[in-house]
Length: 219
Image (tube, rainbow, N blue to C red):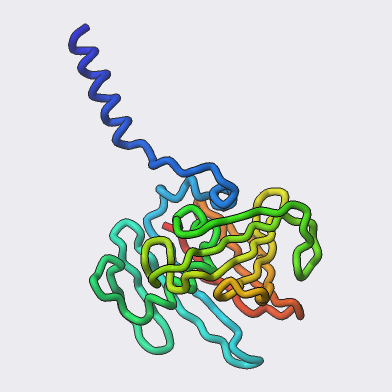
């Protein structure tokens, strides 16, 4: 009996050590969960290509592979190709591109990862492009030092996310510096890779595809 109690105590300690950190059950976190956030601990790496239509002819593309477990990023773009550590004292200028592109590719997950923002919701709001009845979730990043925890590279910016009944993002408006105006784009074409969901195409109010995510691979 004594040995059994020792074993149960030991197993209890292991279980408590393996528990996931608690995440508040807020609307932003529920959005993250709609895209598979609860399964993120099963993911070792995510690779993708970020593409933007710069004009009627030219497309800018950047390839990324984020190795989550060892905190490294592999970058391949029009200028160079290399791998760097996210824990280094000094990060390359391309890290700004990594942060920007990751918000496009993984904004729902950023809502659970980031801490430096406030939010508010308004029900029954028409989305700016398609006029769909939506829940409007406004995310306002706090002002502070760029790149400090939860701030990203542009503190003080705001995102208006328009959600459907399943808490999936259908449109968003990015407002730099929490300005009154911003450019709306759609969030379309959901793809499932591994245990996660990604939105891969974005169209402007004129119906032109302006940005898309391709070559997604989750390991």
